[in-house]
Image (cartoon, rainbow, N blue to C red; front, side):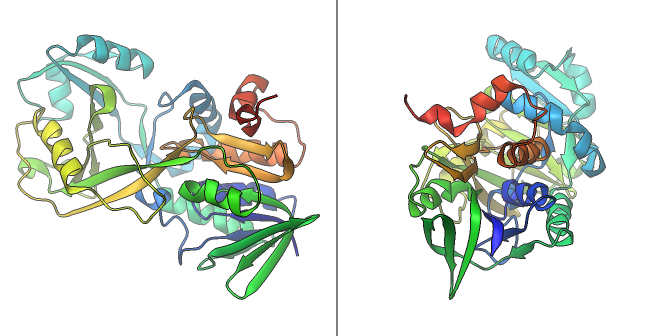
Length: 354
């Protein structure tokens, strides 16, 4: 028997398991054969402290010091065209991104075309070594005497003073259950007899294209259109381009929609001099949000032995260090460093009427 079972081997679950394992016997369960298979394995892998809602930004700031060993410089560039001034200025202000000249923007990304009229840039955006982070958290779980079980899909959950979780031919038991199942978080809640909170997966598609025009893209920043209608990011000598789609879907092993991808690539092409002539690969991941698009962290009000760790959206890696520590503090009744107002905004209690 474990003290705590964590369901879900993405960055949310593995980081929560690592934090909890310092104080309790933890078993982490992942249905796929490897950790980080779904959303975490298909992340844009960017740390941008000013990206997200206020609660996310609070968690970003609190995560910054932990992230340092996993970061490498990338930079962030926002570009706008004629008629987009209001949206451009709103995005630049939200992201605290100082405006630069278009010529300066082309120094960063030389393929920007003549339609670009506004640009904003800051250097403090970084690539995250996501695989190393996941593996380091998993090593922490094991070093603290916990278990990391992959290839163990959950088929049944019951509660009678303690939790029983059925995986294949084995039943695992624990006092506490952490639901870090990503796109499947509501399904896990229902299986456990807990009211769902409305976690909805949204597809985000990605294409890999050869380096445009034969350029060395390694030092280019990630660059966005206003309103996040597309973005492009260097990756291993190629360029990743996303239509930044957010289509609600059922939980599944996601793949890119060809039409959505084509529309996003067209939006990208409208900003650059080099056309997209071929894709080397494409894929999609699921960004899962609560109805208010804010993370759900903490004990369920109707069963305090059921702990929510869900709704990370596209902010899982950015927020994981602080979100997992907060979850451990709340679960173990330790004093959190995060302010009380943010904790209330993240609590699953917000979905329950008085």
